Length: 154
Image (spheres, rainbow, N blue to C red):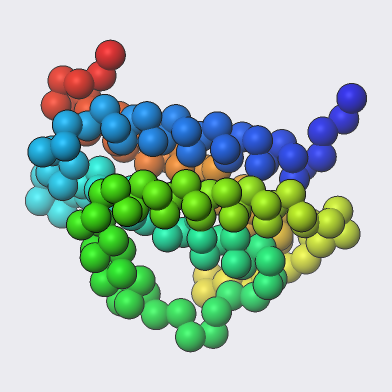
């Protein structure tokens, strides 16, 4: 039985989101805003990024257009504010991931090759729908690094 690219990405993304949340929840509550070095990112900051980006990626997959009014400074400010509410951010991550999974599963085979102009160049819908999978896996590794420093890996 063959599995579509959309279903593969959606299923893998769902799994990595669950793994990321488990990794995040291993970090003691009083250390979720701690970072291992000046300029290094905290677990809470990474959680907020993923929660927000899963939502914006779902929108990008649906609209096939990068927002003309995107402002990186505004995104960083929103991420910083979001990181202060851990429970709200975990809920947002789950909600935005569900929206993302629906968006990925709704992509037609014909749209997989559609190119979208991003600030750094053209990307296909296929590439974009796989980005959250990669991004969450990457940040799960960073979270596990923090957990290893704190001595809370199983």
